[in-house]
Every structure is written in structure tokens, then in C-alpha cells.
Length: 225
Image (tube, rainbow, N blue to C red; front, side):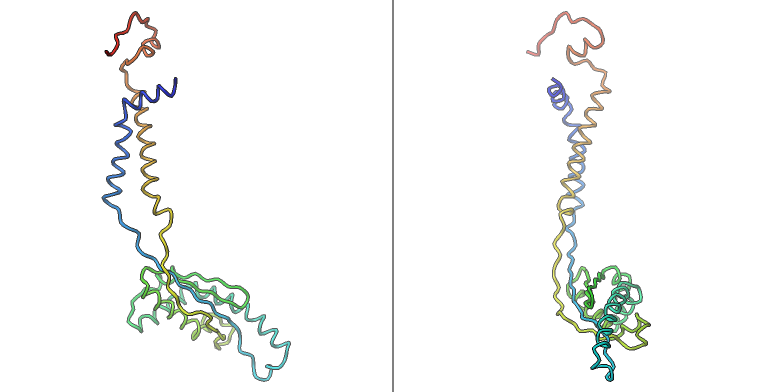
């Protein structure tokens, strides 16, 4: 019986339940903008220290060079996420005629490292711009990495680039696709709550059960037809 009661209320107040959903739908359609395109690209490096000629044949020295390379990779990954690296990349791009602030570059950089391998990836809203940004980042990493690691004594670590630059589009996430439907569902829920509130505050008597609730006897009922 309760479900039938709610259904009766909904039929009587359906327009209240529909108003919030219609408003959200109208505003959503009027202000809808397709998500801006986003592109991503990344490359990997093998990082190490160039051994001195007199120690090139010493197995122990080669072992320490490999061990040191892991610390170098960790340091370079941290440096590439910092503002100094982003500023260096921005300056390199400025020399090529591209004005991209260091803050935008720093926010787009993601780094990772595993043993002697360094990975750097970047995200940007323009494919050609991303290609140039990553190329500038590669240049700074290979030519100026001693600036980020004073332990190198001003001598750049040896970086071997393992990948070519491939720019790939990033698909829009599920959240962007479900944004309007979720807002519509919330608006419908709010509309139903509004209809129930109005029904609760309405002092009108609409059926016999409401008359009985206030303690009055029912002598008869006139049907609708």
C-alpha cells in the first residue's frame, strides 16, 4: 500500500519532480563544450657514468659505475620534475620561437625510474607543441643534466635515448561522458524529494485515509465518476 501511496503522490506532483531535471538538462545543453583534446608522449633513457680510461678494464670499477647510475637516475627523475628543469626547457623552446611558461611545462611532466632506466612523459593540448616540448626536454636532459646533480662535478652523465617521440591522443575519460547523466539523476532525486516535501506541507484533504487520520468519521464517498 505504501508504494501505491507514493505512486499517487508522484502522479499528482510529477511536475515538481521534473522541474529540477529540466533545468539541469537545459543548462547542461546550453553550456556544453566538448572536452579539449589532450595528447601524451614519452621516451626512455639508459643512464650511466662514462668510466675513466684507466679504470675501463677493472671489473670492480664497472660494478660501481652501474651502481652509481641507479643513483644518477633517481636524481635525474627528481630534477626533471622540478622548476629548474622546466625553466631550462622553457628557455630552449623560447630559442625556437615557442612561448610556453615553465609552470605549464612542469605541470605536464611525469617521470619514472627503474634501476638505470629513466622514463619521462609529457601531456599537452597540442600535438605539434607536445612534440617540440618533449624534444626540448630531451635536449636539456642530455646536454645539461650536470646542472641538476652537483655530485657529477659539472660533467654530464651519459644518457642513451631508447625511443623515438610518438605523440598519441588521450581519450576522454568516463567521468566526462557521465557528467551530465549523473547530474540529471541527482536533479531527479532532488525533484522527488521536493514533491514529497510539498505533499507533506500541503494541508489539503484528498482521500478518506487523510480524513480518518484527523479523527473524523466517514459517512460516505462520492466517486469521481
